Each structure stands twice: as C-alpha cells, then as structure tokens.
Length: 168
Figure 1 (spheres, one colour):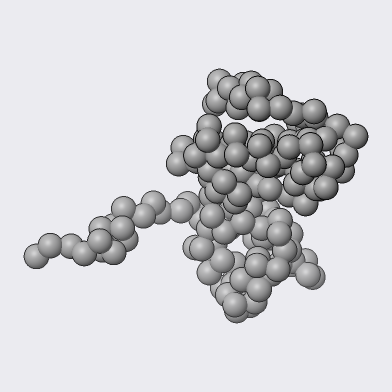
Figure 2 (cartoon, helix red, strand yellow; figure 1 turned 90 degrees about the vertical axis):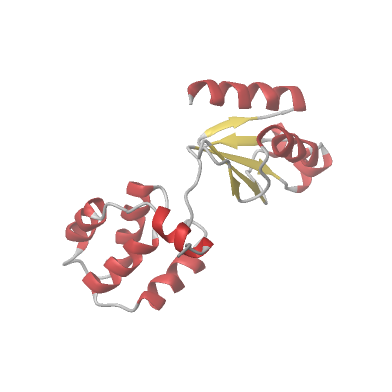
C-alpha cells in the first residue's frame, strides 16, 4: 500500500521538544494574567509559537486553545511559523516609498527569493515590509534585527545581504 502525500508529510514532521515550553509555563504558572508572558517566553525559546506548545499551554493554564489563538492572531508580535535568524524590515512609509523603498523590496525578493512575510528555506532570512521605522531623515531605510541601515541603495542592500549571509 502506498502512502498519500499527506501521510508522508505527517511522517516527516519534526517533533518539538516541549521541555523549554514546560519550563516557561512553570515560571509563570502561579502568576495572575500569565498567558501573555508564557506566550512571549515560548516564542523567545522557539523563535515562534509551535502548534504543540499552544495545546500544552491550554492544558496547563486551563484555557481553551481558541483563546490562545485569539491572542496569537491579535498581536503582531506573535508568529505561528518559523522565522529567519535575520529579520529584514523594509520601511514602506511615505518618505521611504518616495525615495525608492519599492526597489529595495524588489532587490531583496530577487536576491533571496522572498517577499513580505516570507522566510528563506534555510531559515536565515525573513522579509517584512513595515509601515514606518521612524527614521524618515535617513530614507530609504531597512533594519536587520536591531541594526538600522539608512540611505539604502540597491548596492548597499546587496552588501548588507552578503554580510549577514557570511555571518550565517
């Protein structure tokens, strides 16, 4: 009997080690209003919120998984899919847009093969187009994690990508 594509996918899914999630929950278990810090701690441990940790959290905190998903989908800080080690934020605010932010986004898509809210297969980069970074005087601007790059050009974007690829 041959396996369906869904069965093959199920069999290749990686098991998530729930140890770190249990430690986070243990830390906040007796605290009132503990759901947000638990979810923040889990995301800090895994880089996103794996589905298995949602069910574990629901069981341990005695809440419905739907309540947790309500929180996770309401707040932009939470991510339900793995993200890259380096988050490239491209400012698309008015000043950046006027000065060519679209070209910068296109360059990232060409070089890395990812657009807004996408992650490279190697989990090295995630691209995000954001409304404003708050550095209009340096437009156009990108951020890689906490580092800001102003007056960014296509050539400078290539240099930034090369730098972070080399760092792995």
